[in-house]
Image: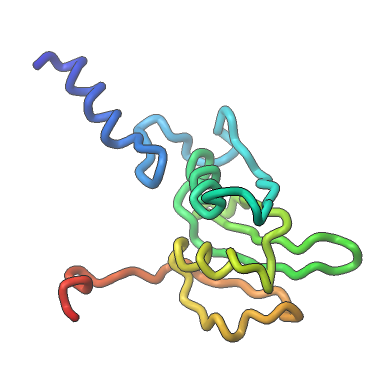
Length: 140
């Protein structure tokens, strides 16, 4: 196997478009070629959680925090995903009371109590550091 074909094969495996970034991923959002900084959320969009995560991962580093802001003063509510460089990816329209907010926070790894996310909540910020212990899926 030639060295060029091995590198191409590795890129195919690493660049799945879902979670593992390719080697040429920019260090921060300012360096990204086709960065999307704002995602317009539509609840009726099929597979919306996966699409949000994919858009965030294409141009940003690993998510570090998430901030949920409710609608106020005629502005739509929004969810802001903040990466390790403090670059912000904004999901306009996804806020407290939406059915997709809890699955998104769970997919990002936020530790939170779903009962505390009420439509009239003040802005909340969550660290995204929750991880599964190795082998947790094997223990009942």
